[in-house]
Length: 274
Image (cartoon, rainbow, N blue to C red):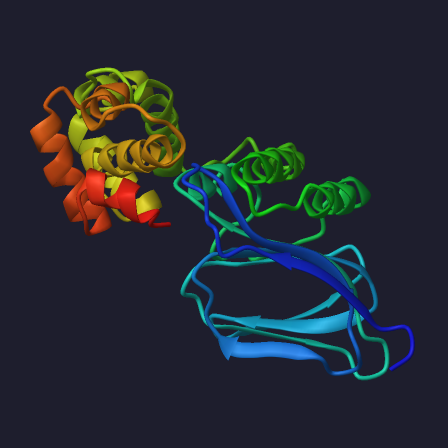
């Protein structure tokens, strides 16, 4: 149909960053154009600038128009379709990484609230456009896109409610932020619990609720993520990589890396595995 367009970018080179853009773009959809039903392996954020459509997830249907934003979560069944007579135009970004759930937890989006009408809608649209303009499959491009994505999510964070916040979610975010900021040191769960102001068992429950894993597993995965980045983009020996991400024993690091990634650090580096 005349007037329809699609500008998109997708990368198969998923950099070892704590926040990674998988795809980004903007589209004026033809009538009844849709996707699904299906699931994604990453988060997918859309912002509608004109027109109408529907979004279905978790057994609920939302009728959306200009000014709405909707979020799809990994492995959650979704379906969305443009209106037959007034199809929507939207901007989108798909992303993942260890920091993604932590950042999204500080926005008004929740599993129970997958649709928003952000006050900073035009700024959000511009932020998504900046991600697209920074598109590149190389490592510097991945860093630039992640920076613009973080700025866009920051706009949504400013609209998050500050009252009535779920206590466990707050403890999990505080603990995760401490672990991410101090992963290179010899830190433990007890220290993270102290920083969050709760007991070790409470922090464990908070992490299980918010991230689906224990604090120690979260820390290990984050360290392995950083190690993969160093292995891919530095010439540091494996032992130095281990020390750089907080592993005092290089042999334990190799075992942990193998369990998480499926191969040894040296094989990972040599194969150029993503």
